[in-house]
View 1 (cartoon, rainbow over the protein chains, first blue to last red):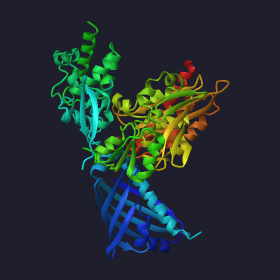
View 2 (cartoon, chains in turn orange, cyan, red):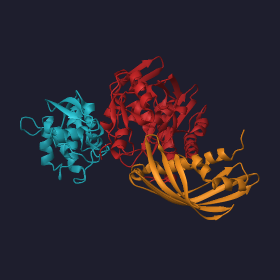
View 3 (cartoon, each protein chain N blue to C red):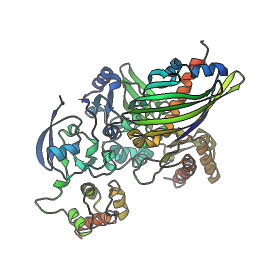
Length: 147
Length: 159
Length: 291
């Protein structure tokens, strides 16, 4: 499925870029992220436990930050597998300054397969959107100056 | 290491006892422990209807109940429809009007119809369609199922 | 498939059930009717380590009238509500909505409380309870609390219940005489999950004006959606065909549907408009017809 959207962060572009490229912050912000380990520069092992209500699953996967053009755009490639199924996706992320804020726009493709995708087909689009929103909200919390 | 519990149920008028893991479905208890293989397992999520049985006189999906939840209940399966070796008018009608081909959904059709005609002995065709819509059939195209139920209803009213 | 193994308890009282939920925390799941949970267990997309089966808590199965409210226990079976003379007379929109739930065998086991807590975005009971502005009583280790419909449904499959809480009771208003009501659902086959549903209530005031309108939609958002702009349009007005058409347009504008296998977002938006219009028309016809 295609995913695309925007989110505005109340922080300057350089700071947003920095936070997005800090593994520790990514781990804090990714919903259900239990572990994020950088294997090689830009390549990570990810352990996620995500889901909704009773439908939770553990996923082990890889994430890669590619074609980075700081601080304007980057590509995120990821894939994960778990008991409930698999996830595979790629997104292009662009940062644009707007006064003291930064507009992030993302465009990508996500494939979800396995049991969860089949059984949960009628909700998976909405839930994915929700998890993404959660990620951005968490990032926003990290970017907000203390107080 | 499996946790097994004792249950007591009355199936087609006969008291039976069993020992089940809590996660054993009612349909699997009927098929495996009681060797009543008339009730069928189709989709295991409540949609196809071939697992339908009567629990205390009401239709339920036996794939969506654990056997342990039926402890103390009275169950009727398709094996209980014919009485004393004689086919029930519903079964005769299904035979005459070709209400079955492969027979997989037939237990669900029969139990659903059996209950329905008890509540509504003189239904319109529209009412039969609605009542029978909960059991999926890949063979008949449904027309023969509806015809069978209508014919059985007429027969049971003495026509 | 068959479920993963679980520990299984059958408490006989609410405090016993809550004690178990507290003890096992996130690893425990309440089993009521099981018509939504057991499929998830069978598919193994849910793998709770503990099931707390509350079907023995018989005290939670009741339908009562108290002054101008109907009080319904959390464990009341959907079929009981569907055929209850009290519900059919005093709150017929609930009985009508329930008749759309799957098929009879599902409604034989499925419960009012279970459907609400499961919070499927297309489920019928959450939509109608939203339109009725019902109140949910939940009980947990720290006691009792009341939740209004608008705060009860949080998002997909998520209610406002805390981990160790149980929904014990639902209160809904009895409909005043001469209230227009309608529940409509679109699905490809009878009994399928709804694609879009609408619950409409027209409460009449004096001089033939609609005093208050209540419109809730299912299948167009992560939880039941009240079409507030459409409701405002109708409140205090004499209902006309033109107003009904406009209300449908406003309702559709408020929706945020997703596309899936069964219907695209645009199709759902259109269904929201058309079914809101039809539903309001039906509710209005009931008032005109003096039913």
